Length: 241
Image (tube, rainbow, N blue to C red; front, side, top):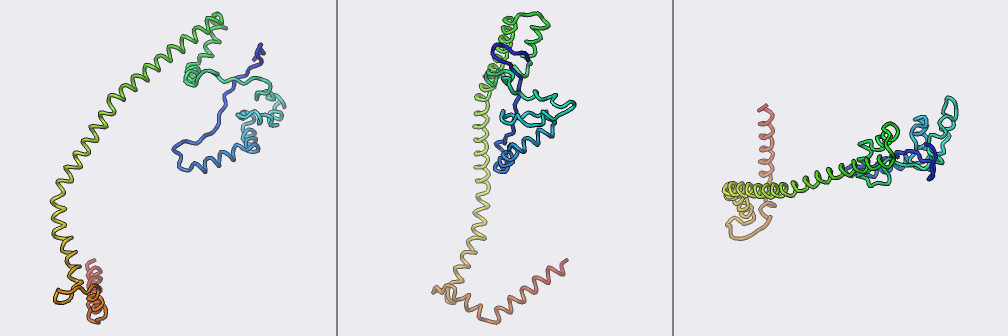
């Protein structure tokens, strides 16, 4: 681009890698990025692209690849910005406005209006300003509409859904309560009562703790019964197949 009163500007679109918030292994991703952004590794990436990929950092624009690319050598030496003032499309506008300028190609249309349409610079700037104001107004209206709709609908749905879930869970608990009581009466209580009886003496009058179990473990008849029971159970399973 020709040099003007403020210097020679060059369009620039920097890019850089990042890590998503939902990444499962952020430390490994950050370590990989730190490795790739080391100067020797960046130079390898630039060399692999034949000098097409320009590093985002100004300190890395002195690689020899732009001197050596041919034919002929030195053709693309000035491809990376050196003495120019780098400028991004839409800068220094806020991000939302700059995004609209880039998406709608406002800059390109402005050049076409001046060079092909014959409009003056002031008229072209006025047209671009009106386009951006109309776009921002539409986006604000859409955003306000979405926010209002969300405020009106989402809380009600959430409240009604929570009430319904609590209501269903309460009904399910009440319906299962008789069965739970029946299981407690026929299974849990007899099991606990049997354990209590096993800790009493023969006359069921004195607490002996684990004395009954110690007496059984010392008798050969007990272990013979256990052995026969195990043999019977294993044989029943094997021959059933």
